[in-house]
Length: 532
Image (cartoon, rainbow, N blue to C red; front, side, top):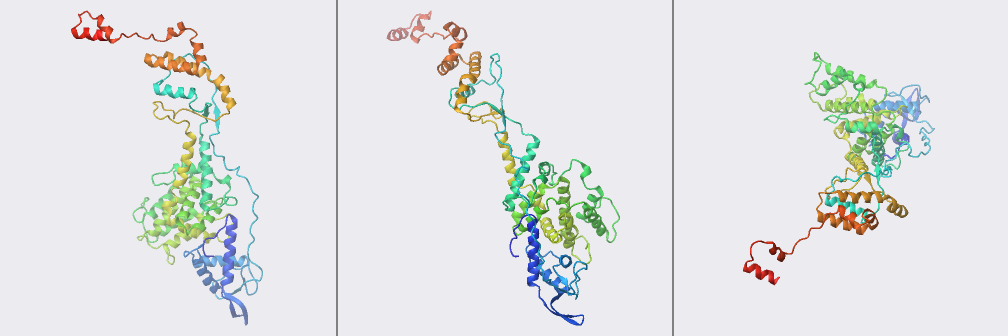
């Protein structure tokens, strides 16, 4: 079982169980033993089995050196109940495996488990569809209103509008982006988090690993944004939090010997009683902190633990799926376990077990477990909890890649128009954007839909008193050239045009201006005017 074990969902747990049995049966030394006044061939004692399997598990990448002899004995007891082994009298399932000279043997029948049947293939309808640019609504046609001065009708703005009107850019239909609701934001986080998790795990599908119905977008959003300065989840409903006495006990143990909020008398063995108080609370929870629904996700992550960065990212993503109360409890518990394991000032919490090993053994089954109590639950939980305890400061950070992808997608959906370079009017707040339409529809809009906006454009230009007369005449002339029919309808005669257009001022030539002077010409003026 060297290297990375590949599998998915319930198949991986069964595969790991079968491979462990295969290695144990293939490598366990067998010999002749004397008992009950006779010889038994191809047998082994209970102590020999514990010794061999303990070393096998400690040197296996899926379990590691944290495996204890007691855990190995518990696994052999499961082997006996599952008829992986039997005593020399053929008994199994009714007695406990003993770590002594009692004789055992392997049965002739195959002890391997059959793989569970795969569920029927499902589509991804449980996962929400990401909202796209196609989710829009058309703006209703505005009724004609009295012409008036348009706000911000500057030269650059008029040129931009005019360039659109005369066809310098593609024809557009004005439509409005629907506002993104909080529910849609939750769905986007749900969809993109599940997709990110699948990529990190290296799976072609999450089928059999994660049920989309158990992924709550609201949980993910809460775990990402509702946190304190230390990154610990903050709960809206305080009733969902741990009791104060549990939090106080955890602080006391984590900061030992500098924190005793209750000012209780410290006696010999006080720290052990505090640990027991915390352990009792977590061991009485209805389900593990990683929940039954997410068991297969975290079992799959076990195969990544040799690749630290990849395993850390997988745990970062998967822990976002937890209900916020569970994520908060898990964060505080991992921090407590790490601090207690590293605290050299803390007295021993057990006479025979090292503090670090004790913390893993005490809380591992409170963190990871299956609803059906899988045979390798204890060993798998110890392996995962050890890794999480050692890397808890980074595991509970929001993965930067995922957050960036979601924020870019949301920003893309909210982006409705582009501001023109050099324009002094910001289009970025406008609730409209362009959509490609068919040529026939474009021609219809030319005849019908553009009449009113062009008339309003002309009236706005006429009513703009702040525009210099020269610029106004120039733009009216340009409008007349581009839209002669609309211009002719507005100015059917010269009188109608002259009524609204400023008169052009007649300017005298420079050499004629001297005749208006009362003073006589100077010799220079006289000679210059005659030459002119």
